[in-house]
Length: 365
Image 1: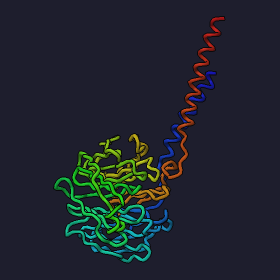
Image 2 (image 1 turned 135 degrees about the vertical axis):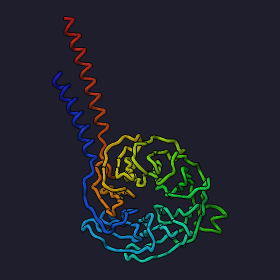
Image 3 (image 1 turned 30 degrees about the vertical axis):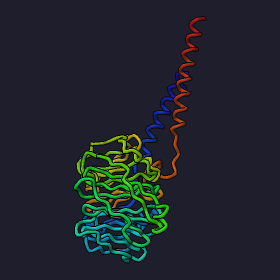
Image 4 (image 1 turned 120 degrees about the vertical axis):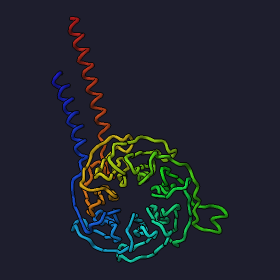
């Protein structure tokens, strides 16, 4: 009986260690096409295709299998951020001239050039259904229609600050805009009644809540299931909040520098964050448990998961775009052994209890 209990404990321990080792990302490809930082990376319509923006003013599409560049799209100004709409098959860029551009990724041609302001446009975003895109520029955030390219809404921050980040939730119900240390969260819904009669397809955008992060926000994103918001500051603070009420679930202030790259895995179970010291940390997004860490020799500007969850990419200060195969349980399709582990622990406890009862009964004879 003692041997069985000991064997079971060793099995559980080894299973737990194996689960941890599964979360070690495997290096896949490394591509360098510029010497200036790769400021933003996004996966396109397949795991093999990626777009990277650089501070030399160019956007490049990359073939991961061949580890080479495909198209070079000159923006004319250093590019601050990229976003991709799968449904519209359009790439969006924001740059330091204040322009937001829409690109045809199959040809590299500009479809639309919108001058939001004469100061830098720091962020851009697209919603899942390909109906809306947005940009943060100066002290405004702008929401546009993909169909008409017309401005749907213009937002101003609560305080006299500059909007640094915008994002749409995956369920199309919310939009966030970060300025200073504040993250404003808006409810977005299609107009109904008389307004919809005169303005078909119009959107109602109403401020729902605001979140105080505690440090000026560099990056803020919704989880893919829309239930969480992760935010990184320009010093060392990463926090995760509940979308519905802004409640802080957990924080990590152990970073060595400003956090620019943040991404949730496609299943929303995991979160990755990268900082200016070159550290990328993987977390359990629900409770903040650290699962794995990657240390790079260059600043992390941007990170992204592919839509399938198979790959994970980082844009680095050295101009390198580095890609890993993601841990198995960070993908969309996951097998969760937590229930089996609980059952085995319960069985072990029951066996120990039965053994104690057996010894007591034997001693009475």
